[in-house]
Amino acid sequence: MSVVTLGEALGLVLARRTGGFDVVGDAELSFGGAETNVAIATARLGIPTAWIGRVGDDAVGRRILRTLRAEHVAAHVAVDAEVPTAIMLKDRPHLGRSRVTYYRDGNAGSRLSPADVDLDAIAAADVLHVTGIGLALSATSAEAVLHAVRHARSVGTLVSFDVNHRSKLWSAEDAAPRYREVAALADVVFAGDDEARILVSGESDEALALALQALGPARAVVKLGDRGALGVDGDEVLRVDAYRVPVADTVGAGDAFVGGYLAELVRGADHATRLRTASAAGACACRAEGDWEAMPTPADVAELVHGGGDPVER
Ligand SMILES: O=C(O)C(=O)C[C@H](O)[C@H](O)CO
Image (cartoon, rainbow, N blue to C red; front, side, top):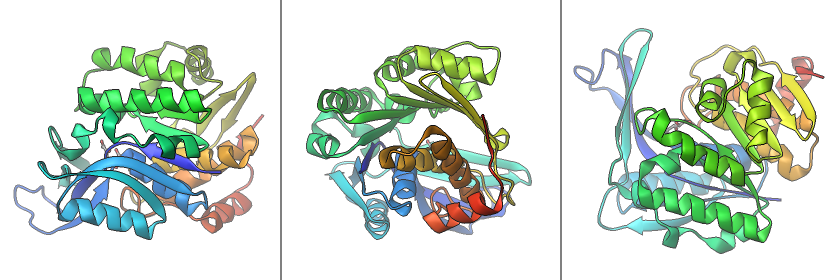
């Protein structure tokens, strides 16, 4: 029962006040990265978890590895002596507007290559999780994702793919064929409704999920934010509502959702349980600031599930 994720983790410099880094100097350092967010989520939910990636030989890289150790995520990393760990700045130029600026091109995570992929770690896991960000970062990173996915399939490890489209990294037109290629090799695909439309067309959430499933995976989940999600597994179609919580920060909620789903998948839980835990985990992640800091424990999930009614519609 275990999960391995593969992708980039990058330093996150977060402005503490509104006004933009043009004038604001008050900031804190953390890190982000969809695949490490998912890893922290599954680890906190009690699933043995590992992450495969590449960091620079610097304070940000060491901070990432130290935090992953503290979160019980085993790191199979290459340390790049030549370039630094990427960073992203997140500030709020004015109330209601959040802005992200990436400094990741050519840095350690983008230099991930097939040689960095720990094949034994993938063979030892029940699920390998990758995202579209790894496909976007560079040609070698995309090769590493595909190498990992193909190896997972050859050794019977399930493949999970979250589209996670980043329009700052590439266009939808360039991304679409790469997303379809990985979706066809996956066992479960996650996409927001807008993201799903990059790969397929469909008039409704259900039509989108079924169209994603038709690309190859047995399971597809369309994430709908505060409208919940719609999942298909074989011929079972289920809709799940979002739990209502006070929202501090929605970043990382999609990764928490995926972590909740995968934690239940490796435990062998049924479709409704997977979606219920995913929805609760996504809601928990919204209750505090930070990309990974508010990932839930089983007690956090249980509190929402037992106190919030059953959100699954059959
Ligand atoms: O925005 C990105 O590209 C990141 O990887 C950082 C964030 O932690 C991630 O997007 C949250 O899903």
